[in-house]
Length: 138
Image 1 (cartoon, one colour):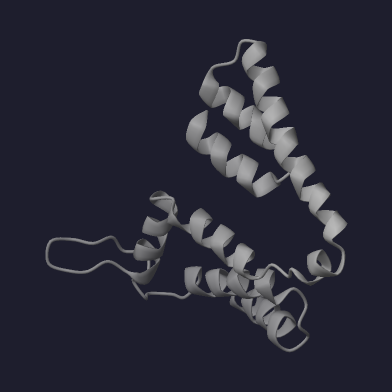
Image 2 (cartoon, helix red, strand yellow):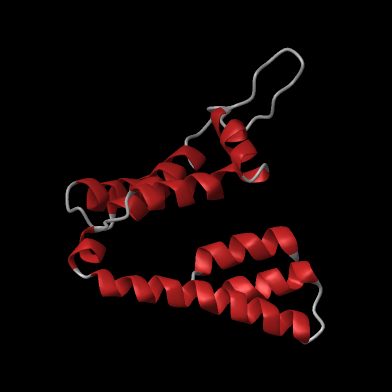
């Protein structure tokens, strides 16, 4: 698996094939397969935990989805919107889709938190829908 991590690192760095995806995957594969490092050990009274233990705390506490959405938002290129302002209506249509789907779901008898989970699907944004549904209607 360490060889697989090396290949993924090569593709991400040298060949520039999807580096935003392959680099973290390769890093995770490499860290998970390093022998006898104690990276996965939990914290005890007299010893700190391993690196992966603390990284997992970010998963467990739900910190990473917010950081991912913040990073994606920071990478947004507004050049096409400035060049063609009429494309703003596509974004507005997604917001209208959320509102309409929420109202229809409430009218069909869903609880408000379930209706919000259904409504976010109307925005056609997969990661946001998954995150919101996992929090509101598990």
